Image (cartoon, rainbow, N blue to C red):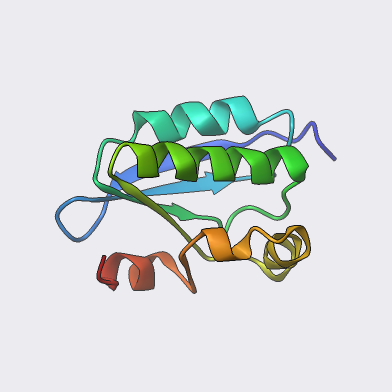
Amino acid sequence: MGSEPLSFRLRKGTREGRQILAPTGPLTSSTTKSFLEAVRSADAPLLVVDLAGVPYVDSMGIGALVQAHASFRRAGRELVLAGLTRRVASVFRITGVEPTFRIFANAAEAEAARE
């Protein structure tokens, strides 16, 4: 389960100052390093992490998301999440990290939201 690959697509958003990072695959202990590298490559003030293509996350994946979020806040930037599957949303609720993030139904909704 943890050996499946994780790929990324980073693109400009439809609005100025926004980028969308769309990972595809599980966010687990074996993929968090590449996830964090992809997050670091984003340079927009607002990064939308579209998790629609992520079927599941483990505790290391949650930790990587929290770490990325904190890093963005320290830099005066914002990282928001979009497109959580039911399974991923459930992990967020169970672990108690859900209130840490601004979470949107999809990337378009996240891009349109005001800061």
